[in-house]
Length: 245
Image 1 (cartoon, one colour):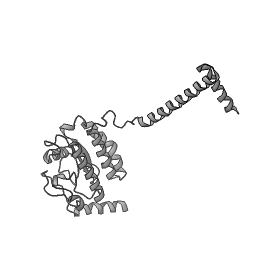
Image 2 (cartoon, helix red, strand yellow; image 1 turned 180 degrees about the vertical axis):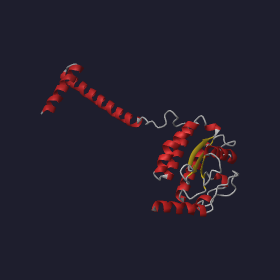
Image 3 (cartoon, one colour; image 1 turned 90 degrees about the vertical axis):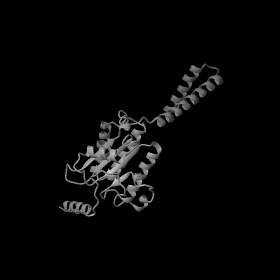
Image 4 (cartoon, one colour; image 1 turned 45 degrees about the vertical axis):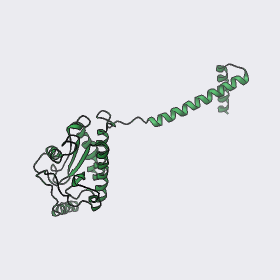
């Protein structure tokens, strides 16, 4: 009962804030309500903001951290990821709303060419909450619709169910950025990477040990005037006797 009451009070508080997503889908000309002041001061233009939320969802620190990461990615690659947290789907299916925002807001070069819209509607009755990742045409090869769905199912929803909301969004955007940059693809996603550094280290140690043993055998053979293989057999016998004592 206490949990239910707390949830209802929380929902009422969100509605009372008057934070509402503009269902005309017009390009925003003002920052969303509640944006951290320190984050607003870093923007030359409202379109520089890549994390938009119209409900109380991320803390100021989380908002700034996620936006800073996405801005750095956009400058590095020219690909843009927009995170949009809304209080309403405006009567659209979540997929349609995400694609419409991508087109109308011009996410990525030439509209929605190399942009991604990561849409979240976090509150509402069961069936009214939604998460969807829409990929622009220029990134469909790197992040097809099935891959975007996997990111939602594997990275976002399990963390959201545990109350790890920022972690879900942070991890999902990490995966999207890696996919866009070609660091892995749909086939390699989710598979454990081969620890080449560790394997090379142990291989290096093994080579050093073999070379040291070979040098020891050659020295023994030269000192005792026997061939290499005889020297190796004799040294093995000596080591076995030492080990038995």
